[in-house]
Length: 107
Image (cartoon, rainbow, N blue to C red; front, side):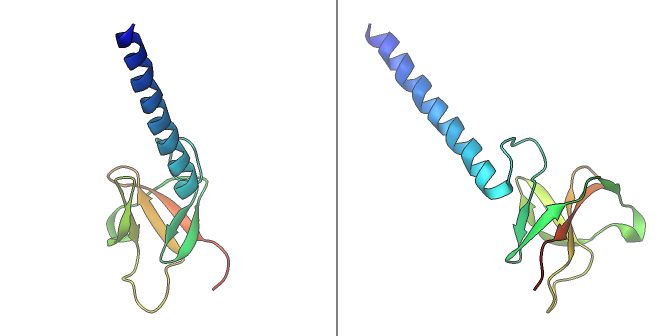
């Protein structure tokens, strides 16, 4: 009887941990699915929203300045961080595939 009770306790703790991780993902990135690209990214004290499509960027069009890391994926920008906040940042999906995120709102 003790083994069955222990199993339910462990299962309950695992369920609570999974629920907490999903809720944290929803809070920080705007969606419940941790495997989907975020529906928003907060970077440089601003909020960015995704484009409806991914882009293949190669050569000089490829962003080179690292802006941060979100869920293990790299965020890039086209120009180095200066006195202005970038209007577009790029989430690297694969080697040359990026999802652009545009700045929301005004200054």
